[in-house]
Length: 177
Image 1: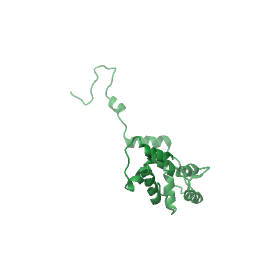
Image 2: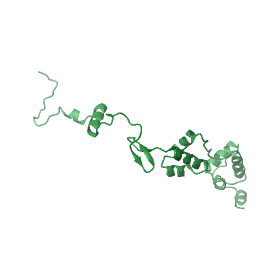
Image 3: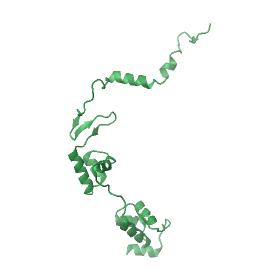
């Protein structure tokens, strides 16, 4: 008589339980085990005021990371710093938020975001300096922007990007003077 259970050839080894031991457990079972071991937090109704605080203020509970909630006064300070021209990375470090959060908070408060790069006059100046023979790197250093910003400005002003390599002698003399 044939049964669904295989009889081992050697009586000391049982192969029946191996597939269950080495297979992945189901997600629902994992969730149940995790809740039982740690204790379920959903037994009481949610309290609208956060119970956890740190030196910066109320902290929202998030399973992956705790998030600091900024008070309206701190948000106003953040926006004022942004409008004063403070770099976004410095603002993020000062208020302990991610740098991607800063523009979000600024727009929520109704302020305008700064535009990066060069304005209309800056693009024209970059294109003219590049046309005079300066390199992208030299123009970027003079204007205080990135080389890619200068390159984009030259292309937008319908300038021709020179091939890489050594510049002609007259252009080198003109840039050093």
